[in-house]
Structures are given as C-alpha cells and as structure tokens.
Amino acid sequence: MVFVKTHDLTKGNIPLQLLSYLLPLILSNYLTLTYNAVDSAIVGRYIGDLALAAVGTSNPLMTFSLLFINGICLGASILIGKAYGAKDVATLRRQMVSGFAAGTLVSLGLSAVLIIFARPILLLLQVPAAILKDAALYVRIIMVGLFFHFCYGYFSTVLRAMGDSQTTLFILAVSAGLNVLGDYLFVVIFGWGIVGAAVSTVLCELLSSLFCLPFLVSFMGKLAIKQHLAIEWPLVKKIFSFSMVSALQQSSLQIGKLGTQAIVNTLGTTVIATYSVSSRFEDYAMVPLSTIAYAMTIFIAQNIGAGKSARVHRSILVSLFFSFIYVMGFIGVVYGVSGRILALFTEEPAIIRLGEAYLLTMSWIYLLCALTNVMQGFFRGLGELSTTLYSSAVNIGVRVVSCAVLVFHFSVGFLSVAYAMLIGWIAMTCYELPKMISLLRRKVKLSKDK
Image 1: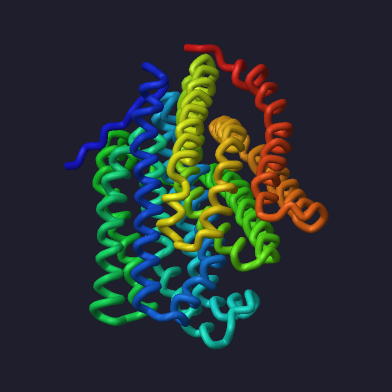
Image 2 (image 1 turned 60 degrees about the horizontal axis):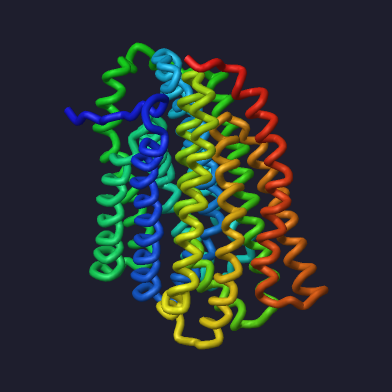
C-alpha cells in the first residue's frame, strides 16, 4: 500500500506552509515547460516541415479541449479544498465522486465530438489541404487519450487540493522523462512520424494517471470512499458551472494573445521574431507568479472551509510579499543577463537589442502583474470565478485596443506591447481591487475564526 501525506493548511506558520507548497509546484511547471520544449525539438527535427505544421495547426483545437478539462479540475480543487479545510469528510467524498463524474462526462463527450468531426472543424479553421489529413489524424489519436489526461489532471488536483504538491512533482518528473523517451522511440527509432508523436503523448498521459492511482487509492481508503459512490447531479452541475467559467477565462487569455500577435505581425519579421523569443523568456518568468496565485487558491479554499478568515487575510500579505520579492529578483536578472539569455534563441543582434529593451520595460510592469495574480488567486479561492472571468476580459479588451492604438495611431512600435500590458493590468486592478476589499470586509468576515 502506498501512503500519501496530506497537508492541513489551516494551521501552522503561513509563510513556511506556502513556501513548502509552492516550491514543488514551481518545479513542476518549469519541468512541464522544459519537457514541452524538448518534445517540440525532437518532433520538429525528425518529422519534417509538413508534419510539424500539421501538429501546429491542431494546437488551437487541442487547447480548446484542454481548457474545459482543466476547468473541471480547477472547480473540483476549490470545492475539495474547502471540504478538506472544514474536515467535512462526507462532503469531501461526495465532491470527489461527483467531480470525477463531471470530468468523465466532459472528457468522453469532447473525445467523441472531436474524433468524429475533426476534419470538418479543421476545415473551418482554414487548415491547408496539404496537411489536413495529418492534422485530423493527430487530433483523433490525441483525443483517444483525453480521458487519461483528465484522470491525471483530476488525480493530481485532488492531491494538491489536500496540500500535497510533492507527489505530483515526482509523478510528473517520471512521466515527462517517459514522454521524451517515447518521442525518441516512436518518432526517431520506429519512424512513425506524426502518429508516433501522438501515441507517445497518449501513453504518457495513461501512465501518469496510473502512477497517481496508488496514492489516491490510499487516501480514498482513509476516507472510506466506498461508502459514497453515488453521483450527486446537483453537485456535478455546480462543478460544470465552475469549469465553464474557468474555461471561458482561459479562452479570453488565448484570444488576447492572438489579438496581440495579429498586431505584432504588422510590424515586420524582426519584430515578430523578437516577440516570439521574448515570449519564451516570459513563459518561464511568469511561472512563479501564476503558481503563487494557484497556491493561494488552495490555501484560501481550505481556510474558508475551516472558517479561519484571519489566515486568509495574512495569506494575501504573504503572497504579495513573495510575489514582489520574486519580481525584484527577476528585474535584477533582466538587467544582468537578459541579452545572454536571448542569445540562446537567436544570434541576430537586432532581435537581441529589441528584446532587451522590451524585457527591461516589462520587468518593472510585472510588479503590477504580481498584484493582479494575487487577487486572481484570492477570488478563485473564494469560488468567485465569475469575477476572474470579467476581470480577465477587461484586461484583454483594454490591452488589445491599447496596443492597436499605440501601434497604428501613435506609431510607438514594438514597445507598444509592453505599454499595452501595463494599461491592461491597470484596468484589471481598477476592476478587481474594490471587489476584493468589499469581499474582505463582507464575505470573508462572515465566518468567525475557529
């Protein structure tokens, strides 16, 4: 029997608890970014330009499906975290079973739809005829494994919602290594091309879910989960509503990226290349900030469930402190070695110079991003997902419009992207901050400290 050590985040030293919970999550996210980069490098080098293009054109469709799966997991994590914090074992059982039922329905339903209609959907996305067959094949194989992706996501979400972020790091490290080996085996050794890349991904997701299972079964045994295997459809409906709002929020972020990319594309190939390279750097830079927000979500959910509002207040201050300390360190890195880091991706001096100017500007703007991420984590922890959706929509809308005005009317150039980010985050802060203050005064204080 494998035993999992859960962590009660409703008591103890808040800074130490957040740090011990945060660090494995940050490492997990960095590991995911790194193995995705290695995966892309193997696929890009060995399967050819057309097959690589087929994989690339299927990404929007894949992202769409994964958003809903991740939304299910996020909604479940908030509800499970609250029940775990309240030590309400009966509710925890019901939420675990109903959450799994909701995710199973979504994943199997999406799989069926996308397997059947992959080709016509890709035609609507204007996928060229030369790569349409390969793109449809890739989507169909990946969709076979969508249920496995949900299982891993849900199992790891349950563990994280109960304070265990170390087990999922270990499982991710093993599965990431196996995925890279699988790519090399199926793509390079067997020469299966795009089929090999898809099969490797599906097998990796299957193994990841199987690796999680012993840890989850151990905890379920402690809960005597067999006493409550009935699905509660009102609870399934509630989780569905959480997932829809979360998916819409993430979709709005993707739409914002596409809008910004469309504007950047009008500025020439040098700017396009600079934006691409700088975005890779920023992907790594954003990991700690987004992870702090996720950790806040789980911490607040547990403590709201336990009725400990004072710890919720203190966790906000601690999270802001961690975020601002990180951003100041990031600013130092940008001023010190950003040029050298950009040189790892390109040898073109013009791209490096423009990228440095962009990152130097963005590094200071991240101070405001740190604030908005903490507020997002706060709202999610309370279950106020509609607020995160509306604030993200405000941010994206203002950002894209500002970028267009700065580029096309004021001819500011590439730095318009950074300035538009600043304006968008200011608008987001103006929307979120009053709501956060109101909730801190009203909703959080409704529960007295136990």
